[in-house]
Image (cartoon, rainbow, N blue to C red; front, top):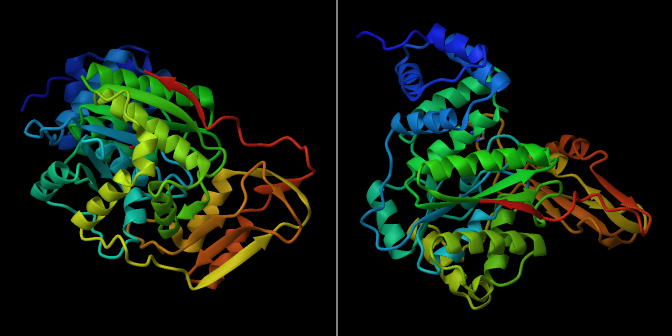
Length: 430
Ligand code: URA
């Protein structure tokens, strides 16, 4: 086979701040997926992109080329609009659990292909797998049938979607090139567009517990992803949300399911409800229901009915008791005052060290492990009051989990400034 381009020419072009054509990007991604372009050549290319960026058209072409490397799903036969959401990940981020059934209770299909957690941000599938019987792997027929019957499906993404991204992401991970906005945006969007949804709402997080800490960079990421979505014909909107403080009161797996069920029952922590409702409104507006009364569906049990149907359809028992940890450790306030600080990242790391997350892809997670918060920044506390409870199956894990929390929470004098990073939803990009 005669190759259409010489990869060294393309690397030089990008190194010298040039622009690659559609044909060059299509060839590059195809040749890399085939193994003709070597990892060391692609590493040089991703570093050149990291340093010099990409034009809008190049980012679109890169995304489309990664989509073309694998299969794409199609919902043409479905008699409901489709809409999905993607979060860039955070600590205590269980929003998909109440959100998918809530949106589906309005007759809209939510095909949500998810992943497992790695590092301090948990994975949606890990959380749902704490429900006895629930299974993440569905056949194509089961997936389509559940979308038709229930509307909401959260299941494992097969390796067939955007395989070029899988290979490239693994390479970026070991070459210091993950944090390039064109590469992150095309990576996330290639998988979401390949999934076949007509509309997409992005929850782009910023702050200490987020993948992208700086609000200006997270806005740039959101703008880039929204442009890719539009260029590919997917209605796309992004909310920018604050991840300086853990979301809700539960960080872990089973405890996050419990908290999600509280939201579906019309209760739950204020911030989890606020973000769920805001994202549901955006998803429903894109699906043609801008006036949907989202709060009513939480209050009157419609969203809960859809949750129960969604869990049962995947073999789960919605009424079965969730796993409870053997060991727990309560941390108490050492003085009277106000909780001023609760940094998301160390709480995420601590929950991970308790066993809620995995360090390697093949590790199991401890579904009962995690942290339950009893106070949030701004709350008045008294000496001896529980601030949070740590749970694990293995008491030997407490020391390192506590170490992660040194300086992560502070009880200050009444009237002290609260370090929560500002409002939960800081912006919108469309
Ligand atoms: N998540 C992805 O899927 N890809 C990235 O590049 C970063 C986060």
